[in-house]
Every structure is written in C-alpha cells, then in structure tokens.
Length: 168
Image (cartoon, rainbow, N blue to C red; front, side, top):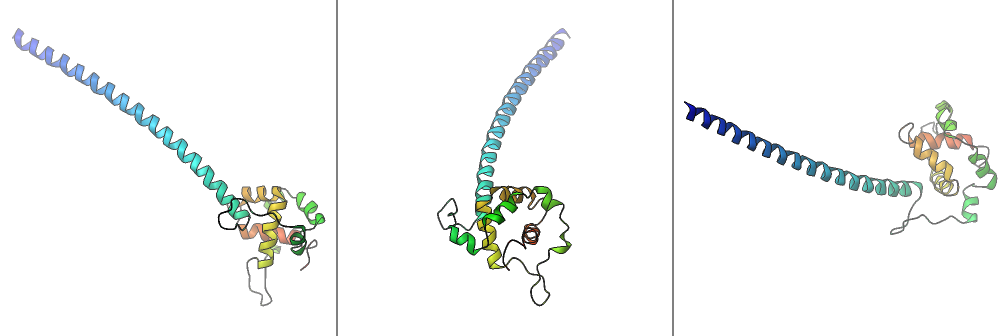
C-alpha cells in the first residue's frame, strides 16, 4: 500500500511540476504576445496619423499629382475668387460656435429652378483657396466635419455668413 501511495505522491509532484512549467510557458507567451500587440498598435497609430494628415491635406486643396503641399494661390487668384483682406479679417472672427450654433434653415443653396444644389465650381475654388490663407477655418472644419455637421452644411453656413463680403 505504501508503494501505491508513494507512486501517487510522485505522480502528483510530477504533475504539479509540469503544471508549473506550463504556467510559466503560458505567462512567457502571454507577455511576448502583449509586447508584440503593443508594438503593432504603435505602428498602426503612427500609420493612421500619417494617413489622417494626408487626407486632411488632400481635403483642403486640389493637389497636383506627386505633390505633398498645395501650391499657394497668387494675390490675383485670391481676388478673382473674392478673397479680399476684408473677407479674411471677417473670417478670422469666426469660432467653432459660429458654425455649431448657426440656424441652418437659412442656408440652402437653391438654383434658379428652386432645386437644392451643392457648391458651385467657383465656390469650391473659393473654399480651397480660403482654407490655405485662413488656417483657423481649416481647423474649425476639421473639428466639426463630419462629426458634428456635414461638409456641405459647413460650407453653406460659411457662404451665408460671408454673402455681403463676396460678389455673387
């Protein structure tokens, strides 16, 4: 009987030792997996930040193929698209609240037939140039769109606010 108890005790000790070895291996594997996951997360975060910056750059201006920054508009181009020093000063007074609290009932674009439309080609070019020369507006747009309002709503509010500063 003693022999049987001794074998059982030895088997239990051996099983306990193997269990401890498995636990150590599992902990080591878990730690390595956590480190690898953290490393991959950092890499993905860096890549996502780079892509977000690229998307922001593309969204704020029409880029020529292969360029990274939009070409600066000339003074003549700015004036052609209604971006005068007075307009710039007026736009610099805007805040995020200016857009967030604006009553959007008054800012639908309607063509001659009474049908809603998006920005005209002239308005799009005006917006691109404006974002280049008034960086604060670009920041507001980045904060507001698309989380709090649609891009088209942002620009409809903007054009309603500046209608007295730009020629039709």
